Image (cartoon, rainbow, N blue to C red; front, side, top):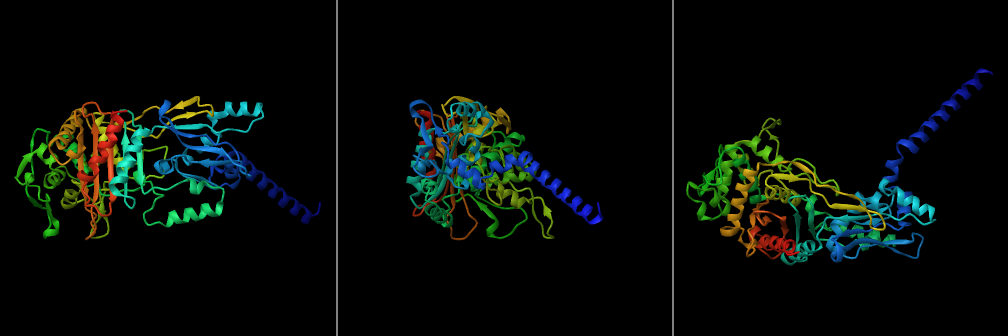
Length: 503
């Protein structure tokens, strides 16, 4: 063989080997990633051409269908339908050709029938010459609590308002309600009229109120005075004070190392906070900013951050719905020379009542009070209760998972006592339920922008001695109303707790 032919032969051999390596990689190592990629057109068309599983909530007679597939007379054979669209849109998400969000995305392999747990079902369908049916996903949501949260929030903030409600079962981490406003109709996006679907998506995506954002897990704001329960927990856990002690307070406090009125912390006219010392019960019940600012400085930023992180700040924790925003207790700030330095006393003081750079999602604040309600043990929150076959046979049930002990049982009990006093005789009284001991805390967080109204927050759980539900309410916008965490958030939390306790 002459040299040119040998060179061409060797080159062709290398091309052949490269082709074989690429095919092997795509078919074996990269196949699963390609098959689960929502942008894979072939997979997307296949999903439209089979009977996708249902998304469900509730049990027995109270069970409701959040999403199902209906036969449709076109090339795709099935149309995805959302029977209660606006109520559950932020959880179910939507399914379009090439796009999945919410539970539709996170549980896609189950709903499409491709999950390994549905292998036997696929074999039976194949043997019977039937098309492959998807499995069902039963969520942890309590339909009564979800409806109560939606109705109460909508009536409070109005059709142009923005906010969120999250309710958790403290002992397990089961998410009982998750509402985000404004909402949208996923049926407008699931249509097989792709031009109409694209127009609907563009309209929602360009809306300044961001209806496609799940505020429960994707929006983080200053938590304001609801963060005082974290500061109180840190103070008790570190042996600084107990719930029976007096704590430093005062009508005003110039933050250490600062000058000028802009750095003066006050109590917004709450005269109960004015003495230089008040009881811890009074400090919590009347939400004394000066008291919690001083506590934070006494503790220092490291201990404050450690306590916040024990409750879940600066981490991810929800596995079955994404994306989620991390709640933040700042690790450092930029110094004068551009380097990262620890928070100073003035900045730490602001964090004591949920300002400066402390930011939280509603789910995170629900986790804080849920851990306190569970005597200090923080459970991983979850939304998927069961994976089922198409015939509703249970294939797998989610087991509750302990994340960590956020505080000791003694600390949790003492913070609970402070929060019960806040509902019984303080700012959180709008959440009171006759005959039930309720623990709660209000929050009205300044935005840090002159002229804009604050954010309203409310957190609570009940019954305080053996909690069945913990709730966080966040009010971002309520046009035409004066935002105050207790006045607006308290009745919403009460409605959700009553829905769970009376179920």
